[in-house]
Amino acid sequence: MNIEKIKLLLLKLRISKGIGISGEHKFYQWMHKNQKSVCFEDLNAKIIAQIAQLNVKNAKIFIGDFNSHAMYIRLNKNLKFCKYISIVDTDYPIALKEGYLPPNILFYQGDKQLMNHSKLLGVVGSRKHTKYAIQALQSILPDCVRLDFAIVSGLAQGVDKLSHQCTIASGGSTIAVIGTGLDKYYPAENQELQDYISKNHLVMTEYPLDTSTAKFHFPDRNRIIATLVRGVLVVEAKSHSGSLITANLALQNNREVFAIPGRINDIMSKGCNDLILAGAKPVLSFKDIVEEFQY
Image (cartoon, rainbow, N blue to C red; front, side, top):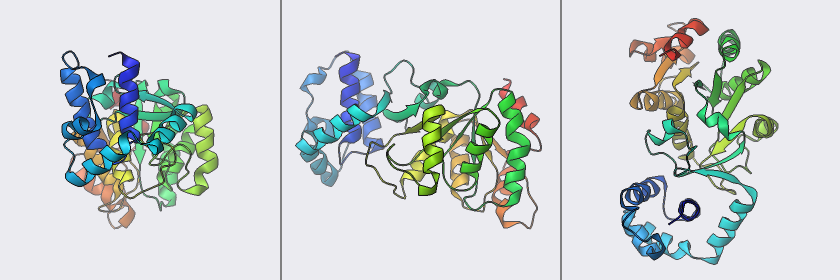
């Protein structure tokens, strides 16, 4: 089976209903293990559902959707209006491939070569930031950009948005990993920024067109940020925030975790201070990040 047919099959799975990222990854692992001994043209929806270990409910949904007219409409729309990279492509990021639940398919707009940039730094933090977050980013990111770091974040409100804007203003490159299809904007106020990044930098997502936001999309999105980069900087975070989930995912994938220390009685700095107590590296200047990227 040639590479283009494999890519198309993986894309079809990504767009089909009833199979999620875990099932897709199980199928990829099976496919990778058996690629020399199996005729992929003989695979049908029932066999794929078994390989993906779908439960009865999801298997029924998947089998009904896999060869449906509605699925082919979705498939053709994404083929026509989206660019995508698959896990079997040679330029698929090695860091992602070796991480937790690597996406079989990534849709993108912009410069896909940024995915393989040698100095990718993730930046995450509170959606309701304080002036301290602005000061910290303006103090650290311009020097990182000057040293050819590319900044990865999630294009959410707050620190995410600030990190993209600060990077762009400093003349650097940025990657936005979003939790919707490329034709959606969340939050809506970031539409102009998302359009700019998609034309001049890189916007990427594992979700096909017409996919709106959902609560579980953000932890899934965070795993991509945490594995794509060499290190994650947490700028401001309360206890139990989503930013700490990203930091923990980064640790699990042997990435560096950095945190901006804050006042001990400041609720917006408690998450960062707790990370530092747990072993994250405190960042007082860009040099604290740079020295960890020299290995």
